[in-house]
Length: 63
Image (tube, rainbow, N blue to C red; front, top):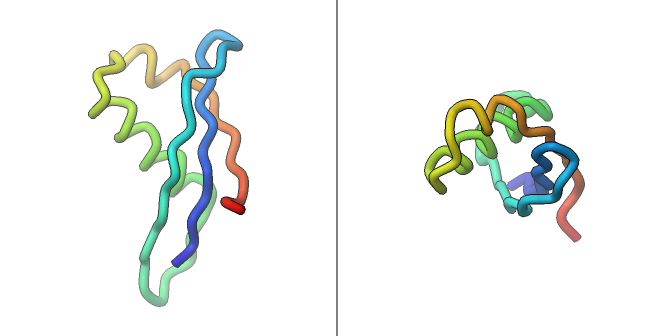
């Protein structure tokens, strides 16, 4: 199952990292799929819609 670490930045400040595993079967997985999942996790953590919209993401392989 492909797992990536998504580093989240807001206004050039590091907020946190999310470890996200996507288990799509027989479907291509794109970086945007990981970003979308990170945005959903941010909203679940209580970040406002505007903060989520302004956030920037760095996607990297989980070691």
